[in-house]
Length: 258
Image 1 (tube, one colour):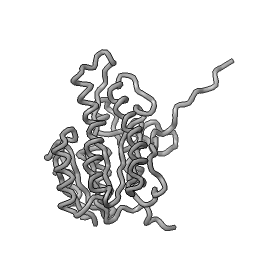
Image 2 (spheres, helix red, strand yellow):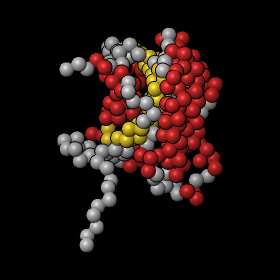
Image 3 (cartoon, one colour):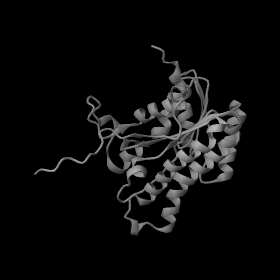
Image 4 (cartoon, helix red, strand yellow):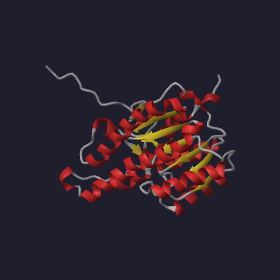
């Protein structure tokens, strides 16, 4: 069976928020598949560690670390410039940087609201617009990370839900506007995923999750990474403007007892 259509070999890929979790796993997988990967987050120390791990694995791809706070436009433009200068182009942008905290709506301060919207929504705006200056002339693919919180809402996460809902809508709108420029834009809305952040907050570790049955309520970073690679690869060439919900077994309305 032919499988090369799923490959990102030879592509230049920029992944924001890739110091841990889904972003880190995606960077490792893309480099293992032969991609040139730019690992980015606000912590230079953490992304240096990710790149060092990739280099130790002796994979066909390569990686560099570029520190960036996606809330700062100057930093984002410098990130795009560094990517193009180092690797000669930019084929795939993965807008993975995100953050949240739990609080009821009345307990969210204006600063707290702005911080979460800034990272999740404005960061996606900054990176997409800056990358678009290059991609609209050369083609490319953007993969945004939203959340089921953005497609369905989530109690005690109104700021995060609102920002991710906007990312879903931005994905669809931008895909339409940039289709004539040969730029595809898609989105993934993960459900509950066992990342280091989730483990720190809730004590649920990835290695404790049973993957032997289809009845899965929590995902792994690797499973989301697989979907990111699909959307970044030629295998998804007929897909743009879509949001793939990856949440395991869905919640449904059961028939009431009568």
